[in-house]
Image (cartoon, rainbow over all chains, first blue to last red; front, side, top):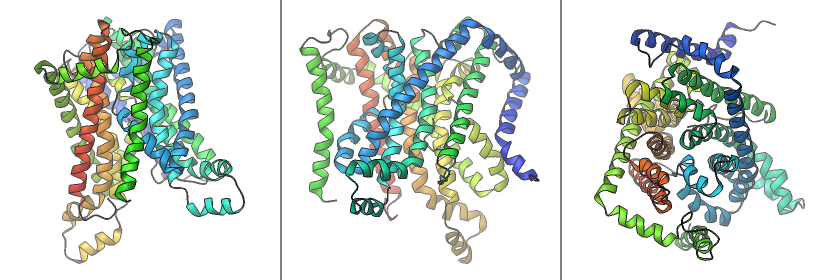
Length: 262
Length: 255
């Protein structure tokens, strides 16, 4: 089977974009030529020494583990809440104002306060990541459950399904594509919250390596860590997107990149 | 919705907030949490009002707001221009799309150390970080909004004699306005969050710096005050944007 040149081009476009960005960086650094702005190639060459160093690797993996736990708990609690908000107006008007107040509060900024209460251990960091993940997942599950066609629910009720059964067998599958969009945003936010909270708490983890290197003036390490974190973000997103395509094949989202990434 | 249902909704919405504050007060007054770790809500709100009336705190708020608006404005101008251009030209779209696909999920906060090294520790690095984070929701919502404009609208405008280059501003931009404003609302909240975090990581002024200073001296009351302030700022700015939206979209269906 022949694959058209166009298809190859469109599939490799993100890769080309990465190479293009690295190329622009390389040229800018060569033109700039200062210590604090190494070229892309120098930064890439520093990556093996970070990943090869046992302590940094353990730190980064511990960060990722906390991120996965925070993300998991966030999704498990946020999806049911969002679904209930979408199906019951009372629940929605009960919870919405509280969420509106919490929304503009930077979750990673709670780190110093939470550290006062829970210490500097894993629990504080996981809690902050959980808070960061929850809001977009709640919001998207809410939107998804709200948009379920009433007729389907009526037919299910007429066929004798109870309210709980309707929730699991009609509302949940119907809202699934939207829930996945929320999870995709939540996953990126989990990574962001993880890095930011580590930058603020400065105890351990990937964010700490990044800022320690900045303080010590190890510019190569700073830029190499930026590449590692950036690659994690892009890689996690691409992996999640392909998982979503497999699980909810029947629904193609109108937008291929969620608007509320940040 | 009748006005009675609206009032019922508002009352219902106040309940969890009141419960949260009541739980907070109960935890302190029954001695489950020492006041050094969790100050009573009365103290925090009193301190908030006291701070809001003091000139030095107002300067911190002004510094934060300046960075927030500067970054947000850059994001709006750049996002709307690039979004419209990508929707209008297939060639540009082929370049912008993969770039956005890669840059949108990139944790922008990781770029902050690089920004510090490149443009220094002043306003610029924080403004650029806010702009980078606020850009993508606006860019994407502009692009999606502009690509979904009904072709019939464009044909009608052309049939009525609108020059090609004016169609972008007379047809596409107004038709995409609701979507663009939604993107702006998301970006505004993100801007609030990012400016605060950037100030926490390195700064000598601003609300984030107030929190970090309080954290270093273990002043729990002063740690709550900037957090409540940024939440209030977010609510006020969101309300202002809602007002602007209602004004700009008057006459649009289902606003």
